[in-house]
Length: 201
Image (cartoon, one colour):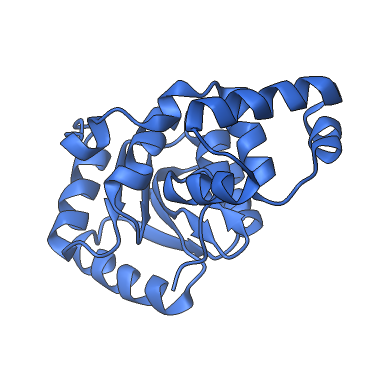
């Protein structure tokens, strides 16, 4: 029997979602994880029909799982934020769908059925809308993420394996493209557009 993996750092939320899924998908076994390391162990074992993954996992990000395993197993990403914040980025990274946690249970069940059946999930208009992130290269997004996480340019240089002067150039380009004038504005931009996940309630 294939498994469905639920990744969420809130135990009570896992209990509620799993209760709903077990009633509606009795043909599957369900696994649960609250951290990236726990989820990675299940993903390495394989035999997964799909993964339901929260974006904000305490101080970790479900986007890291999506980036590493999204080409191997279908991912349905979700968070408390609207599709306009994370939807475009998740689909761009390879997720099969993105949902807001505040949506009705029927929408979650309907979307899971589509993902399990390999039926394309219609991307909402808010997800299709042009995102300010589209103007940033992948490397610029990475540098923006590091800056928003409080890293200094020298630290980013070491982490990304690029010259310090190159990091400065990337930061300048980012500020020009986002129209941000200083680091606090870059942090706000990164939070607003899902570069870094905020702490969820």
